Image 1 (cartoon, rainbow, N blue to C red):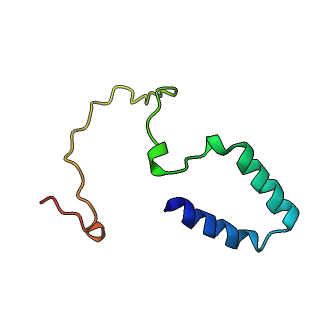
Image 2 (image 1 turned 90 degrees about the vertical axis):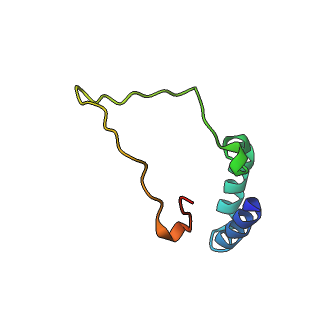
Length: 77
């Protein structure tokens, strides 16, 4: 479903662009199609990049998980 919405939005966007720009952009997307996620299943974790946050001598902070916003409709029950 995500792809269909994206495709529709891109078609609307393309109506305001010169045809040569649209052609080049579509060509670029086709050439690099494996770079982009096609669905939420394509997103995940990677072990290729690691980072470290230097906190100096600060002690770890313990705090309870935050409450979800009321607008999300999720409750802890």
